[in-house]
Image (cartoon, rainbow, N blue to C red):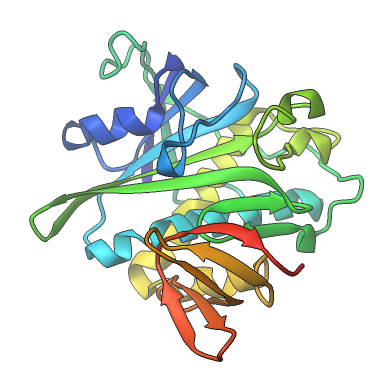
Length: 292
């Protein structure tokens, strides 16, 4: 996969930029920003991050897959991000960049489609990293799109498809990863949150983290296109924060209470109600975890 990275200092939203201009941009375009004035996640929830404190990125993908399959790509990225964080926690270095090509351009927000400087972004091995107490089991996935460390959100993922008729045009896949926030900043967020800097003593530069995620996602995305979602699902099951817990799920018009039993092979959440009936859902909002 060839990635063309456009870096913005300030933009309203990297996600909205790629989604609005997707027809005119190439497959593999990645937009990053130091600050977003209107960054958001699912349901247009505001992403709170001061300048430079988070890795804010969106990628444009144009795979030849079905609309249903496109809805599964966010799970592939979730698995990739967890793997990268787990590499930190295991003190391992990722293997060198193999098939991934990353080109970097700088695009001013006033003229976001113009690239002022294009060149090669060299891959660098990450610095020696170690954690105070973080273990792999503490890095968890919370359906449908959150990554947690020790039960607190460190990353959120958003996927949006552009469809023409019955055909998929493209997918914009976005991620915010908390890197440098301290506890005083995180307390402003309306739900428990954390950042990598609170767990990792020596952090690599954001560009290195971006390279690592793109490298890992290249492999996982290739596997997804060729073989389906099974590999990512099997990995996420090991990091599932909800499995075995009773939850309340808001389905929009009704609420459903049941025990989360993991994901099926299409990435749907399996819930068993109190009367033993099972239900698979593809969207919804978990509004309460009753048992922990």
